Length: 227
Image (cartoon, rainbow, N blue to C red):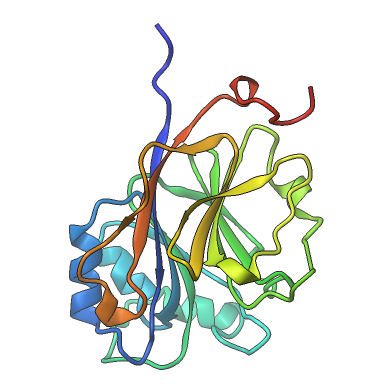
């Protein structure tokens, strides 16, 4: 009997900070089915209380070139017990996981965002989940091949037109998209059904969408990795 294959439901949501409202955001995320959420444009005071409300873990992206999110001192502040206060216009990115713990992140908290604008969190199951936001076109990050192990998978969300991630020997394919934003994954992560736009989320920005991915052994995927 073959072992059960790992499944991960990934949610992608690009919020509009001036329109998102805390009670609605927490209620919507609490009512949808997902394992890990990649949130962009999240008001910067909200990740910690949001994770508490969802009984989840989170990691915030380090500062981008435009200065959003500040440095490591601000990230420590965001982890405090302060509750969100109304809508906020200063925003950043966060990865929230509620059915697996976050084992590590890249880049580390003390570093600024790389020129690709990529921030990733590694789940305990060995899958990396990333947000790409505001990266410079044509700036693939060569460090990724030393960060992501040969037996680890990668999922990245971001603007479809801005994707620049290059993982040598591990091609990324679009597994879900809404015309503007997309979810990419290494070829060992295969959608089990078409992506679904989630009802009720348009009030906070672009409607969120989610896809369930199943991790297949690389040896069983034609053209994956060196022969």
